Length: 567
Image 1: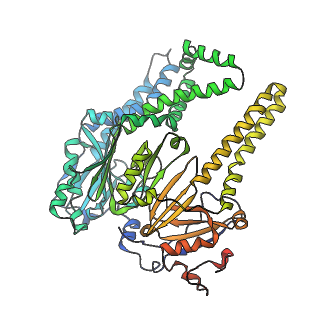
Image 2 (image 1 turned 180 degrees about the vertical axis):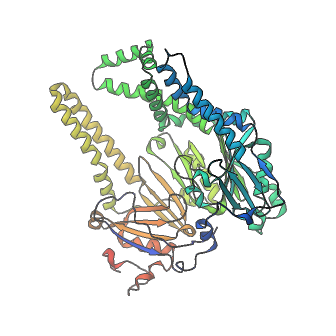
Image 3 (image 1 turned 90 degrees about the vertical axis):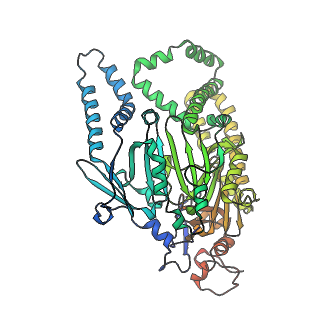
């Protein structure tokens, strides 16, 4: 595990967005002029558009599988299926279909040109990918910088026995465009394992302690299973937003196709349910409609969850964590342990009520957003903690009791947590004014229910707020609706920022943010005692507060601009 490479300060605090904030930033000592090799690798460019020296004259050039000519058009046509359905419905009375024929012809022609113009070479020192017919691109990657070889395959790929292979080199991968990625779509599935073994065989040179027997044991065909998907995990799917996204997409599609929407609404079961709910009167009718929508979304969520994470498996393969998941679209990801800087346990309240959570890695070279790596999807919290402890090699950061923050921090959780309540209460009052006495029931039931709901969330935020300082490890926790427990290694921290808003200064608290090249880039300890803010940074990064050169107790470091004084 490499040390910090460069120092940087980040002036953002996710839980403190009030105006008038004051920020102090410190850099890690001794890192401004001498970044180490790891940081250089993370920021150095990995691709070149034309490098003749990278081409190996003795290595053969390969083409993608000819079956790509079938897989690529089928995948594109599947994505355009809603457009074709709408076009056919709007033109049901016409006699020609030149629009559909033209689109299909262009898709087939584009696939043919991509196949003809794409070739790749696995040389002794570099791998080279040439692609593009009208705009030619040449991507070269040094074999010594390859960190992962990920594969994925959807239903059409598996039927045609081909796979997508993408080579990863580190943090720079998350910001690359499609033209800059070394991505092979698609090659024969039988060639995937030999290609992965060939591209990752330099691991022994990177780690002299790895013997030949170890490499044979932890090669791409071997490994120790850490976790595997279970059907019972699907019970957590309805308590996520997966189903609501699918339901919204289906609703928009049927709404655009008016005939289909009318047919759905005219179904006997739908009409009977709507009539029964209307007979209940307000507000029970609205509550019943919300429950009905949630039940439909829950069914869709279970199906989506099973398709996305079915056959999930997490395997330890020595230097790599190997993640695979998906039924219709199989994904295989190799995560380099050398770039792991910690883990983040996601514990949103709607999953915690069922005893569930999920696990995300904090590591360099992983993608963000929808394509981000997931170590463990929605699963029982005991499995999440077990996997986190197994990956960290120590259960203490996962189970340690957190230090509570000052009571003023708890007061801020309540005052800020009730802000949405006042908005909801105001809307209910406006409805009462507009609708008259018929809306009295909303005032009687809606406002108290909203108050109880937001108070409960505020109390939960107080319960989840805290941090722990372990040897070379920072553990922090915050949030409720999106609660998370973060375990970040000190080796991965490259800078610190202490932020105080006007309201935080009056409360005597501050937000301490650790900057890192891994994961989201910033991980914060929210609303801790301001007098201890820089002491926390000093404990994990010794010497970081020497930049202020002030006199006083050496055990208590503080920034004069934060209005703090040594005790």
